[in-house]
Amino acid sequence: MNSILCFQITGSGDPFASRVYRNLLYSLNGADFPNMQIALQTNGVLLTPRNWQRMRAIHQNIISVIISFDAATEETYNVTRRGGHWQTLLDNSANMGDLHLQGEVRILRFDFVVQKANFREMKAFVHLARSLGADQAYFSQLFNWGTWSKDQFLDQCVWLEDHPLFREFLEVMRDPVFDDPFVDLGNMSELRAMALSSKSLPGSSQQV
Image 1 (spheres, rainbow, N blue to C red):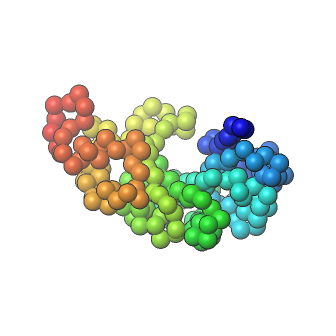
Image 2 (cartoon, rainbow, N blue to C red):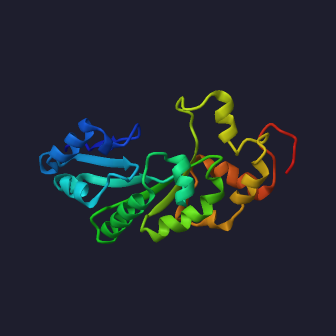
């Protein structure tokens, strides 16, 4: 029995912005590799209907499509995703939602990396993701890929107890929308529990 080979394309940049990945996705014939599965991860801007059709030979191999949003409004998106195009993202995501409803896309997840600029939009993002046809709204903490200095990065980390916006962040995390099974809080789950119990971060005696 052949083993399943699963490829994530890609968590290190948008595959449609890379000539190498584009050529790979457009040239593969899934029928030649029936044991191949592809988890497609993209910022969504170049995931146009045309480009989706250019991958039609591997549609059966694509087990999931993950689209990074990091915002629920255009204003915030222009901060967290500089160089993107909000309306194009919405249009392409809605198209994927329709394809998911039709069964052409098996799993559709929209992602939101929490940071100072966008944490107030977490609840709105849940509603946006649902309205566009996603299976799941997924949240995670920001990771520093060398974009910021240490101090700049810490300024983004509103989940840290000594951050000036920490209490406001906890208030956001108390919203019952995050109990919805549609939501996956990822590495934010402990912070949700903390917000509900009104306890301080581990290792601190300060109460909120």
